[in-house]
Length: 117
Image (tube, rainbow, N blue to C red; front, side, top):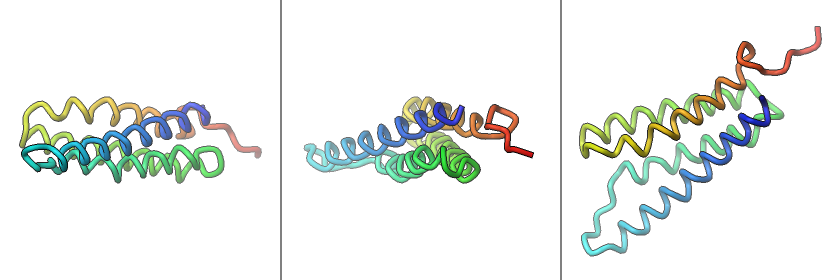
């Protein structure tokens, strides 16, 4: 379960970093010169998710907190983007659910390795 949480965190984090950066570059060099705030907002949540994925094996409690923080941030930004733009939440829901699944995999009752007594 630790490996699954690590893979989920790293893949979602790196995907959000590159997706947000690509959207920012595309918006900055487009005809309209308009970059939506929610495109840039996924970059920090991607960094948080990737950091949680990278430290899942060494510090699972800290990694679970980082993944949970990224999932909640994605969900909140997605809800606000829906209020502003309508269909933008579709981009945030899968990443929020995947990172939330990684966080649940790290919690003790969801399969984290039991510590020696």
